[in-house]
Length: 322
Image (cartoon, rainbow, N blue to C red; front, top):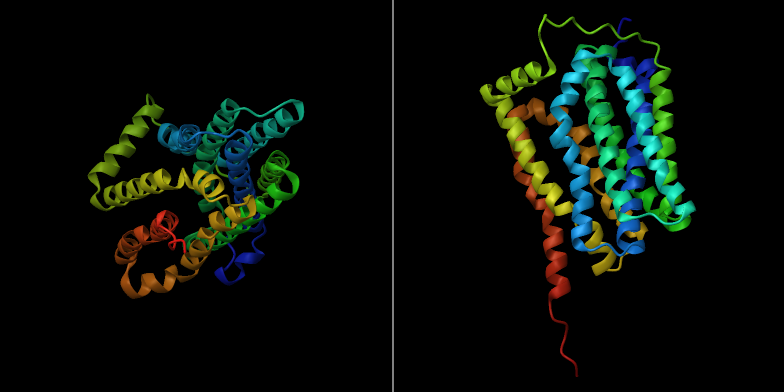
């Protein structure tokens, strides 16, 4: 299928279906983020260790499965992987409202659901990233990635804010049931893509997934630019994960915020992502990709200053009694 001109990308039917499914899923994930936090902190009175374990369960699949997911996406057609992972996420998330209906959600279930959904997302996202180049080419691919980035940032913003409202109005378990539905919507969107994905290139005789993973690691470690980007992103992600793991606990319990307020704060990051997706092209043309990435990494720690100020203000002594 010949790619449409860049100016008519929104007329590209397959891209619209793919884009719509991704946006719905990102918005739905924000609902689950708020819902699980409220169930753990408010309903189950989770300790700091419990909340940290939930965060670890959500980050561990990326560490364990990313390399294998990338190799799997190279060896197999991507569309069936995406659809399977979406259906898997829907089924797993459905267990929370079912457990709430039957009795009570437990912390062990939250650990399992968080881990399994994250595992499916790691595999599915690797396939999704590899699938887009089969729909778009050249400049159109860059524009498609920019549109996806902007839309996903808005969807993340909307999902977190909507998640807070839905949790407050319906309860956390029922809100999570809506997220399960978004994964089914995404699966249907991808299923209706008309483009037929080409077969993966045949592998040399005797090659294995471990061989491909080792080759990928060798390339990453021995290519200075790629190595620097991977290591910096990994370090930044680790630091942000460590700080954000306790946000819900701190805001819901220590500051007694409502789920709606938590959703607003969690969704605020979507504004920055949306602006970045709109501004990246002009910034790259003026300063180049390298300086823009370095500048973004250098400014990233400033985003944590409000937390420091909140902690300082909450611990500061009040005015003396008269």
